[in-house]
Amino acid sequence: MAAVLAETNQGGDRIDAVESPVKDLTACFFRGFRDEREACIFRRWRLHLSLARWYDPVMWHSIPLTLFWFVYFGSLGIFFPYFALYLRENAGLSGTEVGLILAISPLVGMIAQPVWGQLADRTGARTRTLAFLTIGTAAGYIGLGMAAGFWPIVMATALLALAGTAVFPMMTSVSLAILRDAGHHAFGYVRAWGTIGYFIVIMLFPWMLQNFPPRLEHGAIDTGVSQPGLGLMFPITAGWVFVAAFIAFFIPKKGAVALRAARGDWHELMDNRPFVRFLGFSLFVHFLMQGPMWLFPLFVRSRGGELTTIRDMWILMLLVEIPLVLSTGSGLKRLGARGLLVIGVLVGGLRWTLCALVADPTLLFAVQALHGLTVVGLNLGSPLYLDMVAPEKLRSTAQGILSMVATGIAGMASNFSAGWFIDQSGIDALYLICGVGLLVLGGFACWILPAAQTSARKIQTAALPSDTVA
Image 1: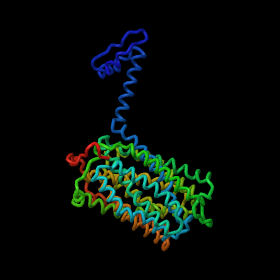
Image 2 (image 1 turned 90 degrees about the vertical axis):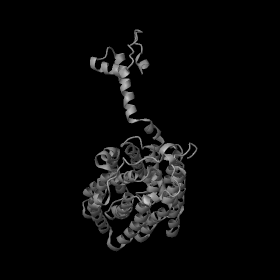
Image 3 (image 1 turned 30 degrees about the horizontal axis):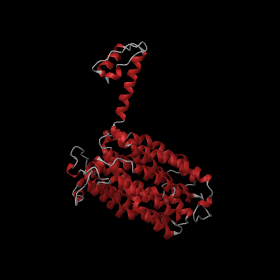
Image 4 (image 1 turned 30 degrees about the vertical axis):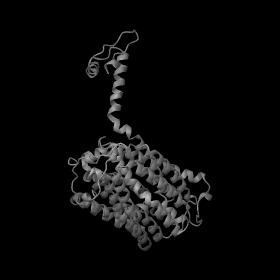
């Protein structure tokens, strides 16, 4: 560093080099700079120190991980907001049939997610497993786009779910392992790029539909269809996921992300009281959350909204969500993972309750801003809390079991019962019941969930893999 500071000025004289650059820079700050050259050197070192603060080696190595979140979540910005609408209007299915198809992915995920998680933990090949799961997911979207009719869509959805349901818990466990030494803010920074990708694609997709002919739709029904070309979402989603799979092969493969578990270690999770209580809590929360979330496009249509209305509501949700996700580290330090969870559940309950009770379109639009708090609290608080209470060598298995319970058992029951319920009693009653239920659960959350203790967590170094793994 002293050599860098000992540069020549325009007259050829050297600026005095000192043995301690930090001391020299401090002196310059207080006595003032002798010339512009010295001031320039000071500004250069201030920039270097700033970059070093925000981008330590762990964060630089997370760039492929960040790109993966950006691209993969971008694909969800095409599929997630419109799939239920496609099934109801373009495929011409009833509410009960829509609920059954939406329940297929959680049903398959109940088996697939813990199996993939255990495979990744036993081999230590979490990054490579993520890459191959992503390739399988892209192929699944292509198959789903080719299916026409209730039973073919059921089969295609089940095949997609074999790999697709395991991607999110796997990418979460990989991210938390890679970023474990990068500070409280690191996961929020990486996760925020996923939301940005979702935001960009959800804005672009309606434009794509307007510029491609409806003949690209497969088996659309003309009567009462708000967007005949909606089937275009399947090949576009598949393309984005293939790009994510390519990126996944560049994600770091060594260190904590390659930690191996021994045979039978998963039994430790069943003896972990905070983990078991958290699973029970997640089961009830996601039962009340999943169905209304998947049927949200139908709710918007029931209030007279169109495809652009759904898009505009998602834009508002994401604009609020992005800065909140970026500030996850601050929330984690102040509230802890359990505090984030409590806020997420309470705000989610408030949102569904207001959706049922508010009739004014403008106010209903504004209510969707609560989605951001729900995502930060529930969708980020859950994996962070789980990562604190579960052993590191079992992080993929733990995340897989959580997904099995939350999006598997609870999601299957929620989607099917919600689809049946809207045929019997209407969609407003569904949102009211789920909203009140979440508010009650949120009120008891601190009693149900013990506080997570991070100080007791240690890496099981005996299970560290060789450099050839993954």
